Image 1 (tube, chains in turn green, brown):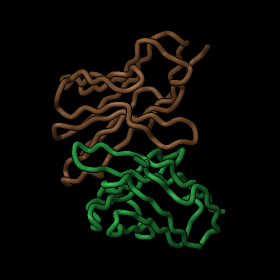
Image 2 (image 1 turned 90 degrees about the horizontal axis):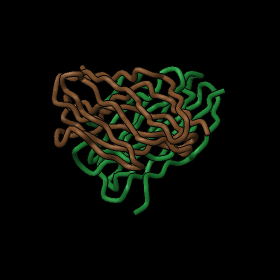
Image 3 (image 1 turned 30 degrees about the vertical axis):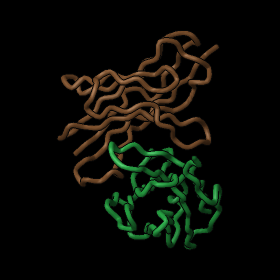
Length: 112
Length: 116
């Protein structure tokens, strides 16, 4: 069974631009979560989608948004990029409880 | 609110010696606890999980962890370190409050170095 895939793997953007990251979960998984990983703040939860509905949201500004499609694929969008948005963005999928998540390799975003 | 504290940011051991990575948690509920490992430039891999069954949990690659409610700890151990164990390890608690599967709270991570 294929694992979680994320595209693109690397991105370089300029301040003020917007970016869209994509995540394809493991087949059959309906829950997709997004995390931001930085050296200073560590791993932080962004949001989680289940059956196309956002179920949980972390403490991030509204510039960070996401959505999930009927095939469970998910996208994350960051608008008006700031230098501090440079990070590794990880996507994780889950089938059902008990909260076992499988992570993709991440998208490395660099904002210049 | 749930939280997790990894007591060491960096642990260094010699190959063949035991590994101990310490984790304390705070939870209002009966928590689910996990250990994940992240090798350089890779995503996170689940090592093991505790979900209120047996308190001693065995994971992959010879790792195990013991849930101790009285000490609010979930330390990760391995009897004999291997060079390939060098990585960053994250202790994680799952936030049940929202009834969702998605809210994992990560510790700051412990970087494990293994000397030959």
